Amino acid sequence: MKQYLISMYQPTGADRPDPEFLAGVMREVETIRRELREAGSWVFGDGLHAPETATVLRPAGDEVLVTDGPFAEGKEYLGGVTIIRAPDLDAALDWGRRYARATTLPIEVRPFQSEG
Image (cartoon, rainbow, N blue to C red; front, top):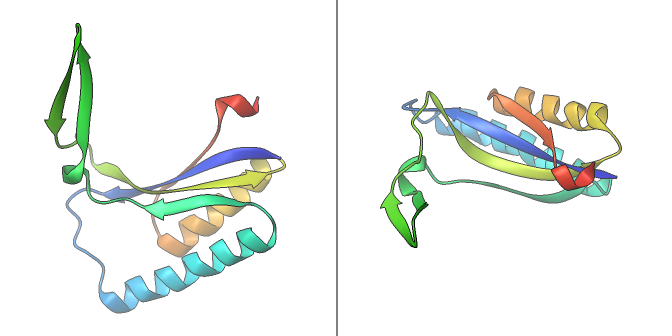
């Protein structure tokens, strides 16, 4: 089976959802993760801290410059990732749709290059 990256994007500057809503989202996400494990499709997944916690490394001649904060600013930022195994893109998109419904966030599904 091929591996796919499921990326979850969060809006920049949005208020944190209320705890009750977030608890429901996390229950749904855990259900999806459990079903991925049961299907033998789970590889890895986790949330990320906000972009301001990032450190950027940038080559500059023989040096590598280190700066705090995100490389690019945008209306959304990468909030979490999941890597799955799926027989094809359609199956990976089915899992992505479930994450989109559960989280109410934009989801990107992308195959890894090494997977052909």
